[in-house]
Length: 247
Image (spheres, one colour):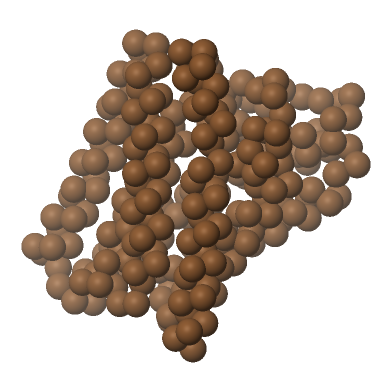
């Protein structure tokens, strides 16, 4: 059982790293154009918060046998911080101030969680507090593609929902779901079970509407619908080419 637990942790690490690195194409474009254009920095802010809380939760003095959770989310924290700093450098003044404010808020929230868990809570109460914070943030992150799924149903086209992104979300969520089950950790199993289910729904939608990809009846996604992909307008370069997948 311990070996399987470790195997799924390693598998989850590999898939999560792939998802973390996927937006690199977006930032290559931002650097090349020296502008964030109409890309949104909010998804990276939210992902950073999720990484920070998950990395903290996986530490041995918070929860046991969850080191793989800390390692990949520690790496994710570094990657997302780099994305955010690049975004701040090239963002227009108004957007720059907004992202700096959100970035500061994320650090403040994380600092409060760390302070409370270290000095006010102990043992199981510490695990429960940090686990709930991490799980809630993870569910919010996994739920972000709902607007894109709604767009797919409305347009009957999967142009805005790359297959490899959906597959990776499903596999990553499933890996961490099984990791949580094997470790008997509901704070990992539940949010990643939700992620696995949402990934499966995305795959089902893809296979239902895949023949309509690029069909004439296209609609430009709204700002809300493209938010989780880091866009606030349709990126003329198809997202599938931009990612090979995505996170």
